[in-house]
Image (cartoon, rainbow, N blue to C red):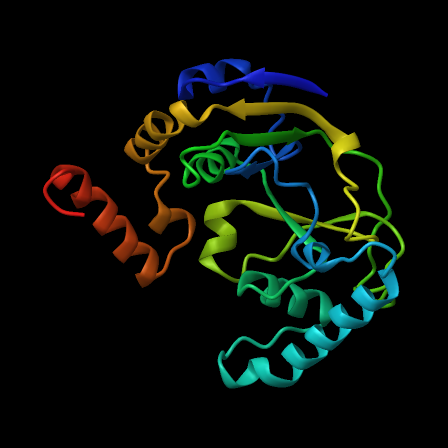
Length: 228
């Protein structure tokens, strides 16, 4: 893995080797965040079976109750896990994007007193997940899943997922080609330039709450020192 320090948007773009719709990226606002899925953060050492049972109970409960809150009807457990991930359910999926600017936005959009990071991966050999015969919670291999574009967020984020077989372990670092480190002091400048070219919160995560937060952020900059 090659490490590069990024101090500006131009600096970042200059370092990128782009392989269209092939290589992919993940941005994190803190460099010390591990490359593990959200369900893996509940892991206690030596308690793999407990975590697996906990995950199954969460997923089963989501399956029973989700229909009350949306008209979306997933066709299988894979699509249902995508839906849960989309709405904050801890899963064994890890989000990535084909768009390096989306990843850079997530690396810079919060934790302004700490360094962020973008991971750049090239394709690797993996086992294909067969939604007609494989169980999404017990598939024994690391895999890549590409969602159908059923939501504008998938389209705008140009996203894909890695499906972990052992979500309590980092199964992706060995596949990272480049790690871009964004120092805390460079984040705001990079974020401002990204927003100038349309990489805004309401574009990446289109919703009314995103629009509201974006409006506050834009106008608050004009009143720094005059309002809290």
